Image (cartoon, rainbow, N blue to C red; front, side):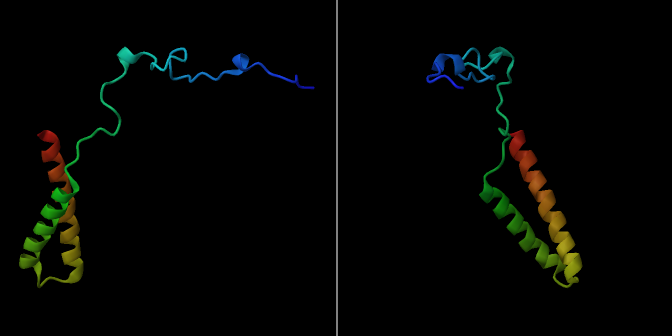
Length: 92
């Protein structure tokens, strides 16, 4: 049978990632200063403008090619431009 009243102090849950319930992270001096997901990405509109512009220029040169070749060139161009934009943006 359970007691009628359970004292709350006996069952306080302490977050294991904090130091004694004070809210300070354990080993704060050893934690990296960079937050996860803090990678630098160019704004979305930079990707759109460069990839759409690149595709527009590409169409001038491959307009008479079959659809499959055109699609393969488009995917390769878009992927390489995406990587290039990201690399340049992270470098600066």
